[in-house]
Image 1 (cartoon, rainbow, N blue to C red):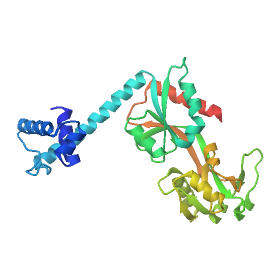
Image 2: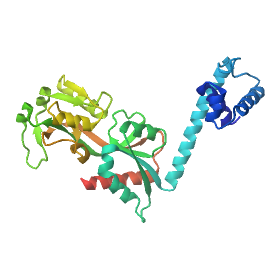
Image 3: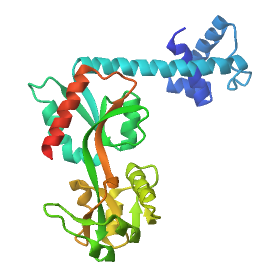
Image 4: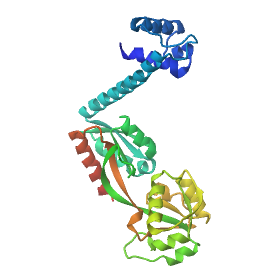
Amino acid sequence: MNIKDFSYVAAVVEYGSYSKAAEALYLSQPSLSAYIRGLEKQLGIRFFKNDRTTLTAEGELYLSYARQIIDLDTRLMKDLAQMQRIKSQHFLIGITLGRGDQYLDTLYYMLNQPDSAFSATFRIDTSQNLIRKVLSGELDLILLNDPMDTKNMSYQTIFADRLILAIHNHHPATQKAYTVPGSKYRYLPAEALCELPYILFPKGRNMRTVFDTFCKHMNITPQIVQEVLSVRSACRLVSRGLGATLLFDIPQELSYLTGEADCYYVDTEDLNVDFVVAYDKKRPIERACSKVIKEIKDSINSMS
């Protein structure tokens, strides 16, 4: 048997008919039917009952193994491709949307110099998609804020990313702000945060997890007036005086605020998030990967 045997049977089940499966496999329907009949004769079983779509008991057993074998084959091909990329010193690196604007040009220039030992192609995406892609072998490394759930990943911290609080400048809480010499923003006492209405990402997003953990630690029950899916929406609502939001101190996010809003640090370490380079812990870190990680860390830290 070969992988085609498993794929053809799985396709009929997935698409619910021989004709649709044949179209997806770029075969004629008679060719697919004949192939599966020949496989049934070879194994001495029937995959489908008389309606040609309902699996027999033997068909269900075959399909359960077929899916595992197809998955293993897919993972093997991705792992082999990744090994070849790394041997050739070429890396596929994912980076989050906001960070793409901040670091992409520097990292691309550094890793793709004519005299560099490495080369790299970058993919910009959301954190959730980057995590999925590095675990599936589509990316070698990803740069993002600490994904919190790291049970399937290893990571190295590049720097601690301090969250800032954006508030409309007429909100009474801003009267409690104080100045620290040499600091980019004024500071708000952590206890002042209980007075604010919030515009935040839904639960499950990293920034929301950090905020929820902070509130639990401070015994605060926050007033969340609106959940949003984009930084732009949050900043627009803040600029209209409808609440406060948390941001990373990067130009793309700050550009969405108008002059009606100010940014503040909060005097707590609980609103810091590590910016990391992460990779699949099941794949041994190659020597070449270690060198690229060091270059990435050195380059980003030199920018700060």
